[in-house]
Image (cartoon, rainbow, N blue to C red):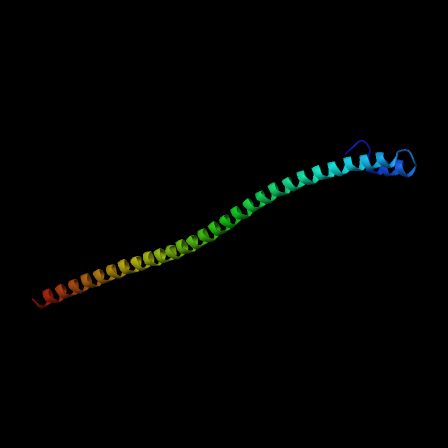
Length: 119
């Protein structure tokens, strides 16, 4: 920053090594460099803010997507449970049908046996 370090300029002026005009000149150089640094910092800050804003937007989108997928998963789980219960009910109905068929066969056989015993 400038020809001399700012502390060195102050020290040299205080010890009479440089004139007031020289101290002011070096100080102005330091002020110019500080404005340049501040301008660069401001630009960098704006770039970083834009990146952070973009990341925040992306994070909100991803959070909404996760919520949506969790709701879908809950619905899929509910449907899977219903499908499992329907399968169990179907098995029970087939078992009952088999039981009814066996009972009808036994009744039929018993009826035939009773008919042939009468004859």
